[in-house]
Length: 217
Image 1: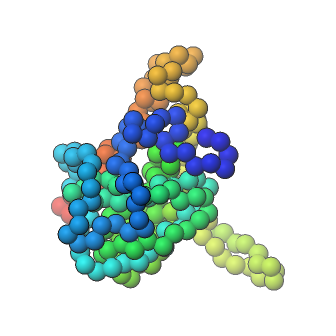
Image 2: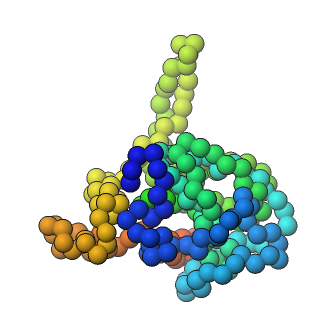
């Protein structure tokens, strides 16, 4: 991916990207309100029970992209279908008028890898939650920084935890067309890993199973 540009599904046309969500043409900065359809899109796959609740209670939230990546906000509609919204540039923010019970995920717009929001994989809009901080997957650490007035300030720092292998796969996918993966001089297992693109449907099935397991316990 070229520096300074946000490319949607680098290395793939977005409509062909595995797990791609239905992009809402001319999407406004709010999801459909109560009783309004979310538009056409693929049918949710079996096992994905996650979906937004159709409520009338507004919840205004600021999406803060604290990561160095271009971020694709994804709203799960009332039928559990992913709906993409305009990309957030690195270190930028956007006010979103959502509704209580609406579900959001955030993806790297270039690699389609999942990102964290408020240190979780899924954001649930609520009137008392006013910000959604989007970060790379990482571990939280306490660290000290010095202010301009030479005062020590305790901060929470995030250390990215993509492995070297995961990062290499992301870079290769961004530079090489999928049809050319098997032309690379690499071991067989890496062909298969390259072809196993990040897939939002797989993530939704996993999150749904995890939620059901938590409810049973």
